[in-house]
Length: 513
Image (cartoon, rainbow, N blue to C red; front, side, top):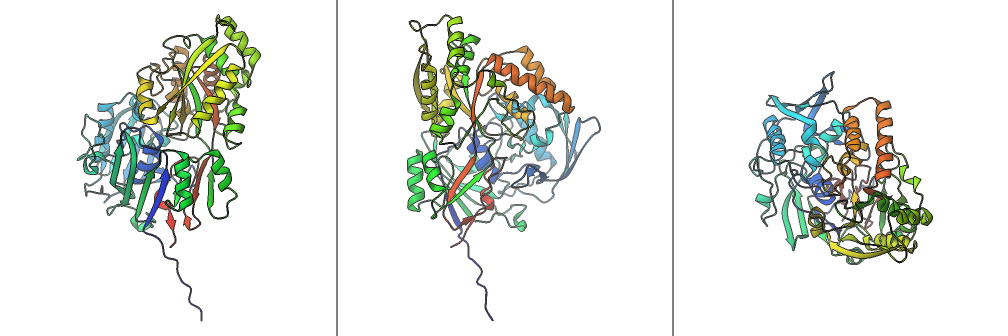
């Protein structure tokens, strides 16, 4: 008789990354990928979530839900007996406090205002201790996806003041207000506005612990300064997983390296170029159109990313409902059209268009290469001179908001899986939002209002087409490419799920000894 030996698992997994929390871990303020989709995904919960590996909604802090026939009132029955890590009970009053607090703060560059929840939701109503209702101002077919978005995840009233954002303090007891998920934050170390290390420990009060999560007791995120040091850490065994951002060359090498596992998932991440329309030269639509025509997307995707990204011609990614290649009207590297547009704007070889293209470091992958490829393509016109500049990610948002940048690069990870999330945040009515382009268009605002309130698929198809066409025509932003999710691990790691949500679920990870 043979006895099967069961595997044993490590208590701690170390993940290396070049990402950092942009500002805070407060749902009222946090609007960057690492804070929302990596850290908050593991220390917090929403009323609903996505089944891993799918886009199917499943219960989380709510057990079930319903919507009224007019589409205005959504009712959620809440899970009973749930507690935050410090023992504070969760119920409908906490959910109402969370939503009322979002309205009270309404951070202009935060996610609640960024996706328009402040205009979508009319009020939050407690109908019983474990039942809450959201009353909308207009029907919105993607509302359930909104509920799954981190901006609507509950906060602990004992740690989250009603009228102020919870900032980093160096004390996790006062700077993290969402510890209701599989993990809680035990260490958050930052230096100069950039993370050094974030340690997560299994939440002793986690409501779904009987379901087998988290798989690993401790998760440690170590933050590296660049892709080179991240790769060295992976090679040396200092980390178990490398997630964002290895260089394209390193990714290519890991795909055929038998000593490591290479993980890949679908891409709803996009990267794009933004213009500040507040002052010359980008207050002139012909100049923006000229840049859109002159960009060579293939140079970026094939040369910079070695074919690991694909060209994108709409702010709505390919593969998502209502996507249209509206920017293909300019072509790629269309020097003739770019030259003609520049001439119409008064530029010539002796009077070239001059501007500074600024890119962030320490967040997205290969932004220096992207910027160099844009410069190379545009200067082929003989009528453009591009100066390249960089700023660390910790400063980039502030520079954007203070109008210090002329042309600049951003990326987008979905808040929720719907084309509305790839239009409204980039094209807010006031022209500000997190991109601060100063693009104001009553026509665009009306179109976005229509897709926000309609549930008629034919109306949505027609209107989203108009939105994409108008975006291409006015060109306040120019899509560049969309990518994939990738990770590298040692051979003993399992449980990495990379799907369209782009949530990194550390609570599913395991590693054998």
